[in-house]
Length: 507
Ligand code: SF4
Image 1: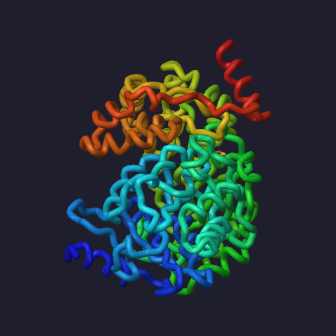
Image 2: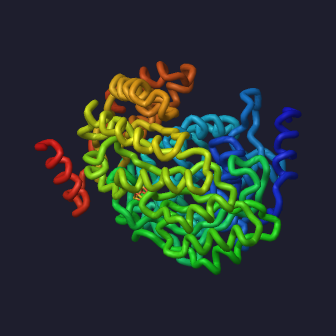
């Protein structure tokens, strides 16, 4: 074993506080995160699946993550240091489209053929789940025998039990699961992905299983304050029409779950500030002497009480989302935030001594024009009058499946870069612009709107260096062309979105 790799696994393992590993069981499952350990350790969904597998009487879960060094030849589990390929089943948690390259790399490091169809009957069952399955898992389809769709806490137990009942026969297992709700068997379903599942209430709130200084969220205990969202932003896969909308973590359950050793607490969820008792929860965490973090702040829900609690809990940056450059664009996306909410956020951040106001933005939205950025300039001027330090996190818009904006085209790398240039020029001296890459957002778009053929193209792109030029060439194949929205009867919110876009076009 590569000594540095071994040392890093031991370092990660020994630094975890509070984790109760289950070392052996009849069915040994390796759970792989296709991004580095520091990201895996910050994923509440990954923690939750590890817990659920370890609670099964017949199974145990050991973890592996994408190594940060390219020199390795074998992927190993943290708990045992054994090769992942020794395990009876291998499960992946996939957060978003760009982790496909990590899936390919880790499968190679397992010594397995990357494609499900090329693996021998004796190979372990290889399955996946995770946030990506809420939108479009078709591109990762060819790499897996079966994929759990949506909330996986109940599905993973059903999947592993079926595998056991079938005598660990992969073919029998996937044939049975293909008939069960919540499972996508890419070899049988093709690009027609079934509906996602909803987990039982007993899994809410999910809790992290350990804290570690090596997490992106260093030494932070994560607890789920809400699951889902009650709002309707029409670009978002977590909107109210997804899986029954928002479910609340009861404050007493959320607070009781915090272990004594936790010095920092992260309240996680798609729309945490929509929790009606969020200020009380924050105050209780701070009163216990801990720092607090919230995964999503809505500008229209910020109150003096909440921001005071966050400041007392160690917040230095107040982060909110404007998303569209103008009110017209925010209206078109069914986004409730307006200029007044953002100005109030700047005032609150200043009043409670937070050093930076960070505002998330998207560029390249449908119907967006350069003129929308004049309105943005005027808004940022106002924010700057109330707070000296404004940062804009800017991401290109990428249309996702299962949203009313599914099928909207990518604005174009040139268009996105031109608008970034306008922002840099107009906002100089008022705001720091922190953009993500327009090129890689195009790659994300090709996968978000893609099919199994798009996933296969990633193999070729990675073989040819994994740079943008390699992806561009691989996606030039006709089979990778985005197919437009998935065919279905439009929902009422999709009809409302079409109406909003019509109003904007005619104004
Ligand atoms: S963007 Fe945020 S507020 Fe809007 S639907 Fe998604 S999770 Fe909810």
